[in-house]
Length: 65
Image (cartoon, rainbow, N blue to C red):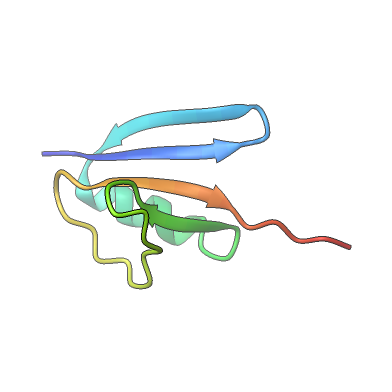
């Protein structure tokens, strides 16, 4: 099984299918820059506890100045 991740960015979005381990690494690498949201429930993921077959979105955290 794989995890589907949709990453939202300035140029649009990209969608990738990665293994569970790669998804965990990707979410940890973007911690503090992106919110991790479960695509099905639209809930914010507070703990990085990713399961096979899960669909996630990485939404950028907007900071103003």
